[in-house]
Image (cartoon, one colour):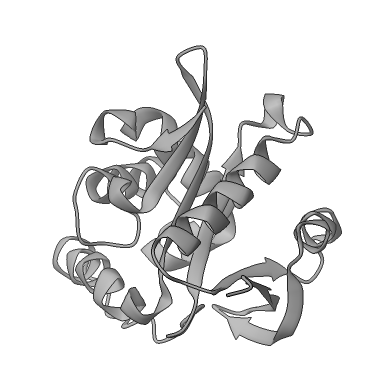
Length: 187
């Protein structure tokens, strides 16, 4: 079952978000310390008004266990949603990075992190989460859904293409090169 996340889901969802971000979690938090990264993302997941909040997350739950998640939001709100994160890092971890790299833009609903427990991958859960993200976007009045996929991630690229995403352009983001993919909802 796919449902909106709640703050109580923090322990299950934060590792999924970090798994999806991979090295980007380290770059964004400016640390390689997994405990610190986990602490930071937990801090933000249980709050509102930021890009990694429970309010921007759907979870896939099976028999009471969360085995997948998708984090998404209106691309026009990215900078406002990221600001609390960057402010917190500056105040608590003395980072001085405004992280001007943006992965999305106004006019698209952005699928930020999509993640499935490694033991449950290959069972169509990711596909269901992506389709739920598309339905969520449509419900909110969006017609363009965007995401980034690393250029060397052929498995994810194929999944997104099979769902109907098309490569729009290439994008530099936090030191990596990504395909910017878009799914268009017919009006």
